[in-house]
Length: 306
Image (cartoon, rainbow, N blue to C red; front, side):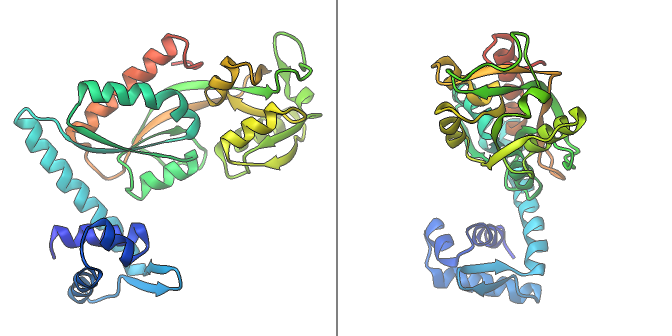
């Protein structure tokens, strides 16, 4: 068994296809199939089974995938440690963030990484916090900036900031409440578009509604942020989001925000891949993430509390 065998196995598992993996690795599919067949013979068990859409991991394959990712990550960390000891800081860091965070954080962060860590390659994925947590647990990413969830078991995580939720409406919609804000009881009569219940934001909002003793009128459940913007902007329906999720629309006058009273807050955290030592390059990116978020909050670009 060689490191290359582990790399090919992980590639097939992630693409779900021998054909896609062969193209990705610039090799003949027959050669790739032979490598996997030899690996299965060495392990004494099947790692994949075929279905109509490609290949799926067996139970043994699922176990092997977690171990293979860990071994490859440790190998990369060791390589980076050796380069760092020689005065070179390079390597690849895989980062995942929710879309609302990406809108505010990614552009300035990636510019800073390019300037300060020119040999570092970044791979960035966007998804809602539940998906981001799953990617981190599966070892698909090294770092994740995400919102803390009740169901999260991310032990290796640190606080970044708190941010409040706001009622978001069309700019010509009749404001609710008074200039100081709007209550959940006043929101209860309004038609809302929100993500579905598995989404961390929806759980947070539903908890706030339950504490207020009201039931929200959620007529549309939607997890696509641009479409939520479009629906709310055309009027007749409202949503509840942090200001980061609508910052550009607010600046352009396409949406309006009202503070919710009492405030509904959620915590943004930075989490590391479990059971994996952070490589020097990963630690360097963590330092820049912390610094960038602090700068964005202190400058007022990010409406949060450190």
